[in-house]
Length: 174
Image (cartoon, rainbow, N blue to C red; front, side, top):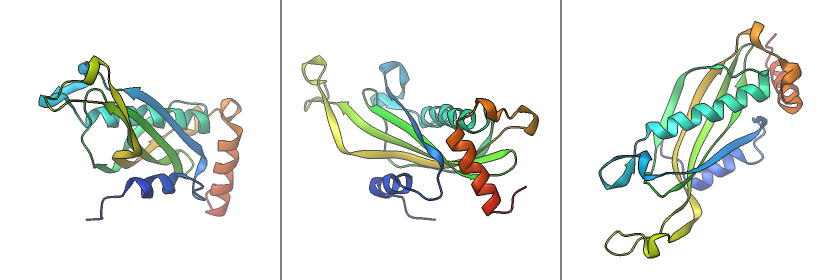
């Protein structure tokens, strides 16, 4: 089993990555009490995977002008617990493309959290603190696909389309 990646390794993987097709996309959100599923206000890992589905959808739209179908994950690693009150960033980028498929790298970071006293109560009822550096909560690799007849590149991001064309040419994908 491979070693768990550090937050620095994950950030460096996405910054100035020559394998990246297009650019890194992300969404940020705060985990609410309604997101907590387990005792101690713990949020289930499936919440991260669901958010990655939205990130993958944005990547597919930018590449093909279509929302895509998620085929599956080849890797998912949960590296830190997520709690109600945590502020999360879910992000990803396209690493490989085929004729209809795109393989994406996904990340989940904790950027802020509730500030709690020794009894576990949020300080002043609204206290919060930055997490610096951000904490990697999960990372993974997944594959999405868009049928050829559904691809609408005229509505896609030109940078993504150009990068994908260069990738296909360099890798002999017709």
